[in-house]
Image (cartoon, rainbow, N blue to C red; front, side):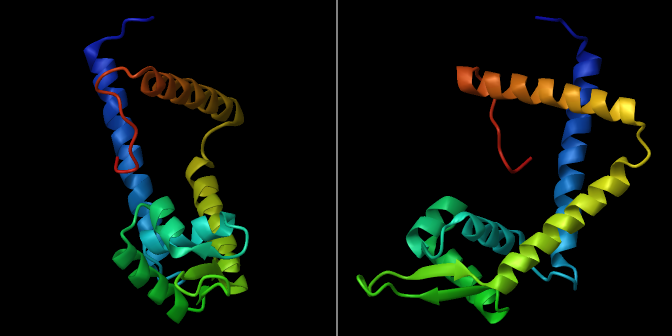
Length: 163
């Protein structure tokens, strides 16, 4: 294990926090713009539905997206209005509510993924290829170390989407 100066660790931690915050802000602006007109919870709901085979129970979708049933109902209602999802009830249990993405919803996700990739290309365009390889290597080393610390149960280490 290497010992690093406090200043170096503080600078790296600050940079990571700034990157995280700017990345989230940039993504929220991309989604909220006229081109997509989505909220982050709507996007995550569509994203999860992409990975469901066919229709998904609302209760499973709420659990998977960490939403309350009431919040998810509102999210799905907005997505229905936009033609991005469809809702129904299975024949074998009419009490259940199921939801799935439409072709339009899946196409929108693909367009968003391409827009994110285009943004990342523009962001990284000024970095020479040899430095890109080193950046990827260092990011991978850091990610492995963070995941290892999380899995080992080291105190004061947690991973959250709320960075």
